[in-house]
Length: 212
Image (cartoon, rainbow, N blue to C red; front, side, top):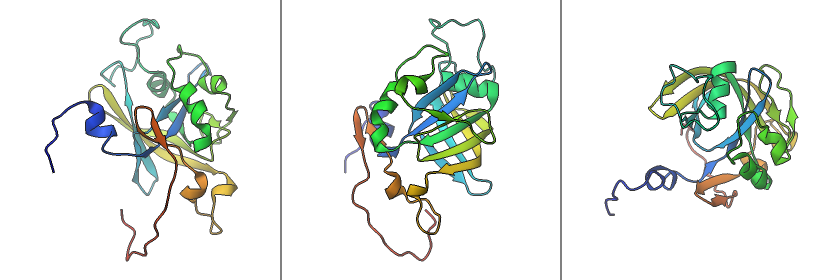
C-alpha cells in the first residue's frame, strides 16, 4: 500500500467510490419550467420515513440566501437550476436511469440556460407526479417523489435530504414478491470523467442479517 497525495477531487472521491448509479433529478420552477440534471452523489439515509440525500454543487456558497433575482445568466454566482428550483418549490423526483438512456443523460448534463427544458432537449418525456409539483421522467424504470426535509451547507456543496412520499416502478423490474430487482433495472453507473458502466456479474451469498 502507498499513501496517496491529496491530488484532485476526482482522485479523492469519484475514482475511489465507484461505480455509482446515476439519477436524473427533475425539478420545476415557480413558473412551471421543468429542469432535469444527472447526479451520482446520492444515497439512502433512513428507512422510516424513507429518506435519501444527494449533494449538489452550487455557484453560491450559502444556502441561507437562496438565489438573487437580479443575477443574469452571465453572472459567476448564478446558482445551478436544480438548487434554484429547490429553493422555490421544495420538492424533486429522483429518476433512476437505465443504461439505454446514456445519450439522454449526456444531453441533460450540458450547460443549458435557465428555463430551458433539458428533458425535452434530450428526447425524454414527462409524467405528472401524484403528490408533488415536480414531474417524473416517463422513461425512468424507477422514480421517487421526494419532499425536501433538510439541507446542509458544506460550503460550495449543499446536501439535500428528501423524504420519499411516492414510488413509481416499472412492473418489468419487479420480482414475483413485488420487490425491485436492480439487475432487471439495468442501472447506468458512473465511474469517473467519461467512463460509464453497466451491471456485470452478480454474486449471491446468504447472510445472517442484511445490515449494510
